[in-house]
Length: 106
Image (tube, rainbow, N blue to C red; front, side, top):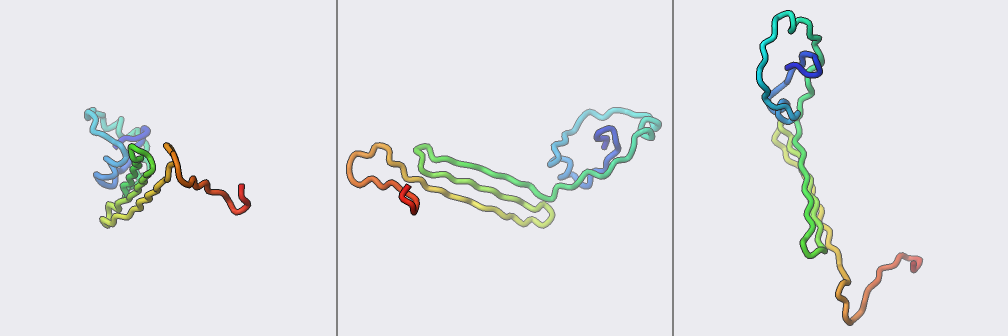
């Protein structure tokens, strides 16, 4: 592949697609044009696919964040999910209102 005016080796098909490359029309080049290109380092492979998502509940109060990574060489999937629940005092009419303070009472 020609990348940044250099010939670069692509280690595998997934590196091609995960690197954001797309098929383009093929152009004919003379052997001299190809010979004039410098050879660059191979493109680094992409052994990982990483994804993340975030969700806020429509009514508020719940927040979920998820991160995952898939090792394309081994098939190992790892991830974390963090769930946060918030207590809202909106629409408070009666009872006891709890206001958290720090140890100094601020």
